[in-house]
Image (cartoon, rainbow, N blue to C red; front, top):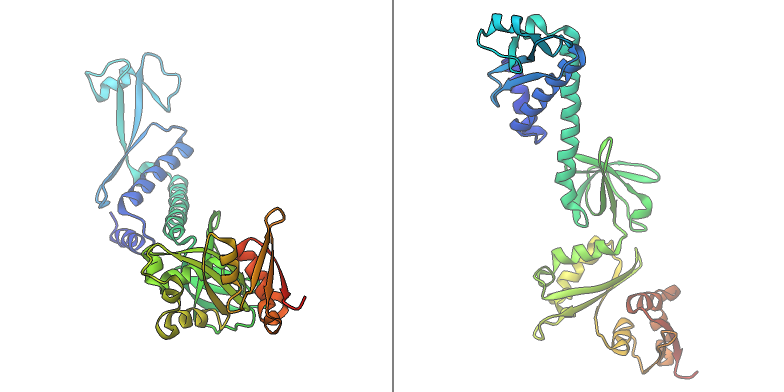
Length: 342
């Protein structure tokens, strides 16, 4: 086998992640396919080893009394000239001289089929490799900036981060390394397509998994997240161990953990609140640091009437109503806030 071919296959195995066994299988199937296409028979046996030091092609005939298909059948008389003891119904094979008998067109066909199969196998391998990143946060390199998207590279794959999936107000530079949440990975005719975001609530969730060991260990559970990207995020957490304060663990000593999260979110405000199955307690926690004086629930309409001191009404509602909106979203209750003077 040509040394350059062996070197090329070694490179394919290393760079494309295609195993030698798969390469050998592709070559064998491609030669068989090309032979069938050019010689009108699939009765071909390929003999090849994984080091590609041996490559033999045999055409197989069935021994018959009367030949109807000369491409696949041979008469007993002719067969016995090759193997004297052969009988009707047996098969006989003849080695094909690839240089002499394999037409140029057939060789070209085999080459094209090999290349096509290699491309398809590479796409499949890439999809299997990157599909494990779905629903995870990954590091990406900024390749190019455009008006409506940012071209980024994750490993060997390039994709687009739409501007609508970036945090409002953030800017990027070519060559910069950023974190993105991988929403989905689809297999397409051109290979794996990765869909990414920095605005999804799951982006915050996965960042917390990497920042707070207690979440990764399962001691603290993230129950729900409500988010307005670039403005504020509320994260409801609960601890499975009474000795572990879920809010304190997420904030970290001197705010070290929450600071790391806020830095990645480009100074988006983040409220870590403790989850409770008691809706009044959960609503009160969701509106912190507002001092809630009273909560009246209308369970039929799932509305909570919340009463706060007059001087804290604006704090409870938040700028543009965002604090109340996020509290309603994370608790699942419509929140109607009133001052005690009403």
